[in-house]
Amino acid sequence: MLVLGRTQVEALLDMDSLIDCLAPAMVDLSEGRASVPDRVAAVVPEQDAFLAAMPGFVPSAGVLMTKLVSLFPHNAGTPLPTHQALIAVFDPETGTPQALLDGTAITAARTAAASALSARLLARDDATVLAVLGTGVQARTHAHAMCRVRPIRHIRVAGRDPVRAGVLADELQAALNTDVDAVPTYAEALDGAGIVAAATHAVDPVVRRAWVTPGAHITSVGFNRGGREVDDATVADALVCVESRRAALAPFPAGSNDLLFPIRDGVITADHIHAELGELINGSKPGRRSPDQITLYKSVGVAVQDAAAAALVINAAREQSIGDEIRLD
Image (cartoon, rainbow, N blue to C red; front, side, top):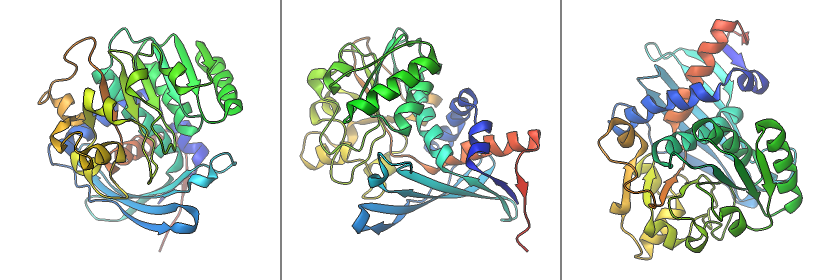
């Protein structure tokens, strides 16, 4: 069995390839070929945390796998990431364990890659200003991923901690060779932004309709069991897309409060969800209808994304003879 650690996975993951390989996986999901049961979770109430299991089979990737992922939000601001994960991959023909991978790097990369895929499908071609809301791992990976799909010339970073926002802005400016500023408020970050990447643990919305520029594409990946990132008015006005209707509307630990709260309160109905990413890709649902339309991609994370990323990493590892082989018998 192949074993790959985090630094190896990070070295093997190519963001451009990952964005591309997520597309057929999302189509498999929307067309019913992928097998992705609802995630289950063991809750650790003392830490406001949980450990979730996310199994999946994706025919286009030829991968049968499961991810175990922990979300410990109090790790924010410490050396430990809030999300940590392992991925176990099995032979889809025999069920034999094939690989064990660090899933922390894959979770960060595939989440940002899916957001970038949504931007490729929905953002205006002339979107050059990116608002990054949050200062953690996902904020960083989203900035890198969005620059792959649109000609980003200016990035604004905002977060709860202005010092961390400044550090991330300096890091991104050096890495991406573009203008990056840390700004003191979410409203200032959103002003004039053609793409918004929200990656926070916010209780109260950090994306509010009054702050959103006409024509903006919003991606929201943050999770807080007691809150949400996007306000009712933005959701109501936006063309809303998700990875999976079933996953987005499921109860904890799978669903999205950004959609469940306005449905509960009668602001929208479940039919307000316009499309899944796979439906945009296969053409069964249209995308943006006008230059001024606001579009929203709300992500909850689905196992087909982990499967596609794992396949990409394992294939690259085999080609480059990277990783350790162990025997379990």
